Image (cartoon, rainbow, N blue to C red; front, side, top):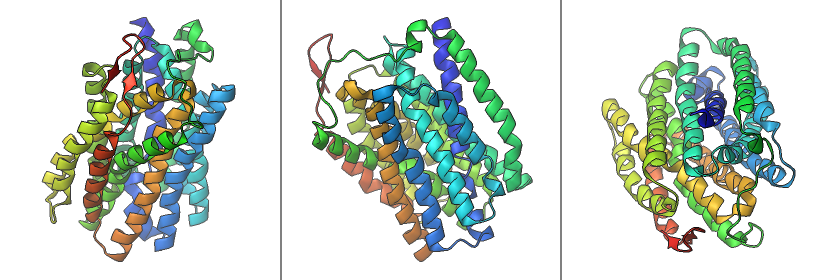
Length: 394
């Protein structure tokens, strides 16, 4: 049991990091009204939340693979928490955008190092380690909107600063305890046994195709919070209710991650990417039905979260096996660049369907063809050859 303590501590830090990252999600409708945000202002802020945490991961992934960046396991969370809890103090769109940019860049810096480090903590059970790590992050994603939405609803935006000191203190304490419990070998920049000679540079076409598939696949994960925020805001719900309902989708993803980690072993990642993309279209079609009642909307979020968010570790694990020599860059590709690409597309969709057509529920419909394309495209991804058997798997 003790060997699991370091990964559990890291997962809790991941939960805190991703919780502060989603503090802004239930606040979009109210921010739009309170600050009289124009269509261009909204696109600017949404683009920052897409680009800063995700595209920055490619840089940090490169740094990690070439030089190591273990310090980002504590520095990234501290800077991210400081900026995200201070956003209520911003007195202009520019200052809010700068706080979001700096905070999300720091959060982006944490992830490539942390996801590779997580695998070294359970080297013989990497998929399980990734599932525990991702479970922590998804749990944080679920708690973040509920915390900020209710705090702002019953206090004000400035009340977010009350969380700064306790969150940073907790992050530092967990990091320290995790390091003291880790096996000495994992304190070094551990390398994964290489069974493939693929590199992203030499196989850039394959890497670009994987990026396309992942970007299409994660569109609902990126866009769901925005679709819910504006749909529910249009129905008159406040940030507390919006945050609670967003948490249903995200917490369901945490359940899915535990299920995937427990029941699906190494070698089944590609199959999961194909089948769950197609199955995931079913709840999305239900959410896109015009006039979908709120009770049904909340109900459909459960299978949507389990199916779509729950299989994220499989996507990352597949990328690690495809490019084992560049695990940091592979993590950044699947966790960062794909989310950033989808985030920019979602920002553009929000500007069109919310500001121009006043139909935020159309966002749900937009996710159906992206999932269908992801499922179709994943069938053309290469099968992975397992080193212990020499056989390719689906």
